[in-house]
Image (cartoon, rainbow, N blue to C red; front, side, top):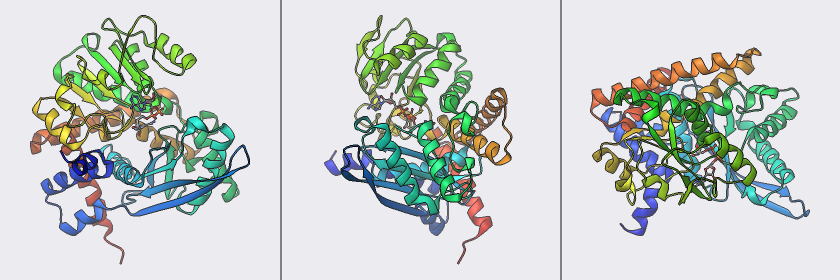
Length: 421
Ligand code: NAD
């Protein structure tokens, strides 16, 4: 593989586009419509001046890409990382459109990011970055336009700052301007766990197809942040055997099962899962290649590529992270008979409960956690069944089926609305 091909494999936008092209061709989508749906609606680039604690001024680059509002306001997370690029945000924004359509909620897709390293920033600096970023994109966001949510290295506090900045400009409190807020500020019960819970629900559905029992199912989780830790905690509670967990610092492994509640405490105190007593150490990439029934990458993109896909031993790959698998790896996994629950289905629990949060904020009426979890389960199970049914009917693998289902829904809305001239 040439250097250019390798870079292409790792491009989140190229990965999305490659899958989109296959699905659009299978759907025999009109050429002009294909071009329209493949391109983002709007890309915003901002350069954010921020007074650092030292009083020195620094400028950070930020992005917000709005891929589609054909089915409703745009929806998508904001990530903070030194590795954020426009290409990545563009790809993730499109994936959000497809994800919202797979679970059939009335949103289009967006994504945002700021190029910064939160580990090197104080809380005050992070707050000033967040507020200025919000102010720079203010005209393009809002409950009816585009609703940000947390993603890598952003959290409930970040959302509270965005909501407050937006509200100050509107001169009244607009809780529906973001989701993933603290519950005390109009957040939804169950949102924090929603992505991890959604992963578990889709894995439960896959297990039924294999007639496996949770107690006999060994699981490996890469990533121990919001998605990975909540998925591991819930799955441990429901009887799954979590035999390996990794974060950016490295992994821990125990074939008898890792005690997740103790690991959560340990990681909170030590800032990493590494060195957890009673377990073996293992590399964060190496852990993906271990024997297990379910592999849950819930950390970052492009961790399963053409280089390591043939070493994956899991029977079920549930993608908690966005875009953890590259298209060349898809083909290898398919040939090896791995049952893939693609990201736009497996991790759609987060955006689904974000939708519930937006609905509750707009109604000013909040639902108990059991209602949230129950409605989440109904949506996830229906979407899982639809994707698997589509795959069987069209003789494609689950990822292409999920893209086909989503593109079909968005294309239908575009056709109904027509193109504004
Ligand atoms: P997070 O920042 O809370 O946690 C990320 C975790 O991954 C951390 O434990 C970190 O140490 C680990 N990590 C990072 N790079 C790693 C690497 N190379 N190897 C091993 N571990 C690594 O982020 P999150 O919100 O849990 O999001 C994780 C993934 O899930 C991202 O791809 C995100 O886009 C996706 N996602 C998140 C949500 C959500 O609701 N938070 C919803 C859908 C998808």
